[in-house]
Each structure stands twice: as structure tokens, then as C-alpha cells.
Image (cartoon, rainbow, N blue to C red):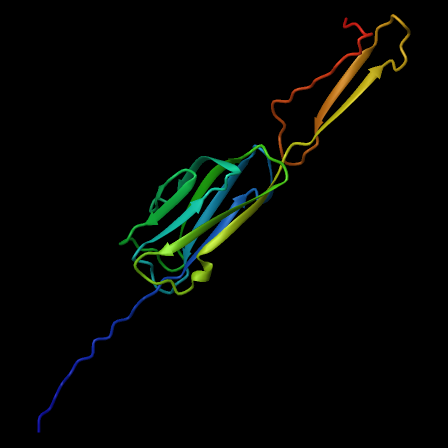
Length: 195
């Protein structure tokens, strides 16, 4: 009778769980031609470290313009309006550890416009056990300037041939946007002379 020995080789396939959180500062309403910063945070929620690397991308909405960015030293990031960042294969992102990029922008001269910005992370060479948290979106609402103009005369009923004064007052009553490059036009009655 012969005896046989055998060995079974078991291989464990690890998976990542990358979570993306995207925020904006300010959140919600933002003024036209104002600063708007987006922060993207990618966190390893898996019980095991991420060792095979990952990438994430973010394309800025057309209603903002890129002004600068800063990111974690482990990330390699390229682009200005369309960002692609890589956490290289071989580096280790431990459980609950995060990598972050902040993108600084300026909003366009718009009024009552919704803007949406979405970031997505993808594991490299390794499955992600929960793809539902790989994407996050920040939403803002651009509010433009709101100019109010008032004009008064003093005295209200001047005597013929006497001098009087017009006062023109312009206010920006917007809560969010600063008013810039304002032009005021005032047409005098032809019966009046400037003094």
C-alpha cells in the first residue's frame, strides 16, 4: 500500500476600500469672482494597508478658474483644470490613513448658477470592496453682485436760475459677492448747466 502526501497552496486576495470625501470652502453659496477652495480626501477604510497604489481624478467645472493647489507629499499630481493624482505602487497607506489635495479656484462673474464638482478614486492592481464610496461631489451656488442706486436732489424745488445738487449713491447689497469695475451713467436734462 502506498502513502501519498500533498500540499495545498492557499492564496489570500486582499482588497482595498478607498473612501473619497470632497468639500468646498465656502460651502453652499459663494459670491461671483470670489475664492472657492476644493479639498479632496482619500482614506483607506480597509483593515489592511493599501500597498498597490491608487489614483484619483477631478475635473473642475467651467464656472471656476484654477488659481493654485497643494497636496500631500506622497501624491504625484498633474493638471490645472483636469487633475490626476497618483499614490504610487509600493508606498503604504495604512488603515484609516488619508491623502489630501486642496485646489484653489475663483468663481466666474455669474449670478444664480449651480456648480457641481466630482472627484473619483480608483484602486490600482487590486479590487475595491466598496466602490460606492469611491466618488463624492461638492455643490455650490454662485450669487452675483446686487447693485442698488438712489438719486436725490437738494433742494427738491429750486428757484429758476439757482444752483442745486444731485447726489447719486450706489450700494452693493449682495451678501456674498464684491462689486468690481462699476460704471455709473447719469444724463442731465438739457435745461440744466453743470457748474
